[in-house]
Image (cartoon, rainbow, N blue to C red; front, side):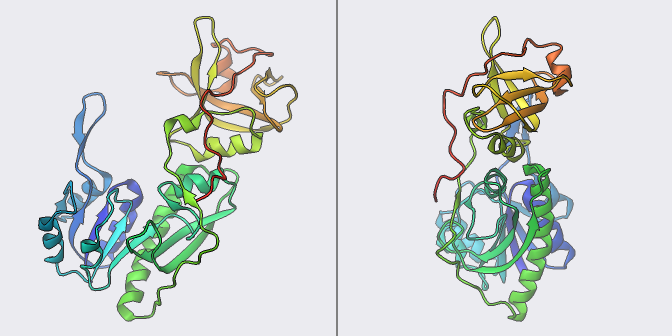
Length: 324
């Protein structure tokens, strides 16, 4: 098939590679423009941009898709289909209508659950036992188009956003090849999404990573995994010269007593913080500008002792059960 690929992040890379390996004619790759990054603020290409260049594919990075010029340029590609994965731009109707078979999206959830920007993180945070990938034909709504194919995968108690992300990205690469094959052979009938079961995966913000000790420990443990590696979870640790923000990179569940925020250092040297229900055992911590450390080693160079009261965040994070 003659296709265009629209994607930006690392989540889209396996799909682009899979389409090229399957022999599809990828006539154009659309991705976000390079942005300054790192200490030197040098312009950095997106992961999709880098892979497209390595495959010898033409790359386009328009800043505005709504101009007549861009609409005509996209229509002139004379596409059978367009594949959209984690692109970062909303496609106007002129783009959606241009390919013969429409624009096909790879979404990292089992639709209609977790439409929106952060489906992987929200699924882990909510305690979902499984997630998956859904391919759909795009319409003008936000992840509301008719579904094509879906495949499931379990979420284990050890999974982080990073591990689920990588698993779903690979799954999406395999599924999009099957989806295009089915559309080409007319063996797939698009299925409208049901009205029941719709949830919305709100975009993540850095401040949402604050750990509120008044919440159940099980919820906070899921948040540590859901927000790893970005935006990360943290708490404010009281020190003589003022509070210092400490990142929590890994945690587990433990028994604990006392008011929420009460810290106890166990016999094994690891700290446990009392929560609204249960306790959160801190396993790996990191100070600003320092390397990550095992929590027991961290305490040997940081003043946190049994009886310390860790304050709740001043900005209360969103509830994971916030409705769509």
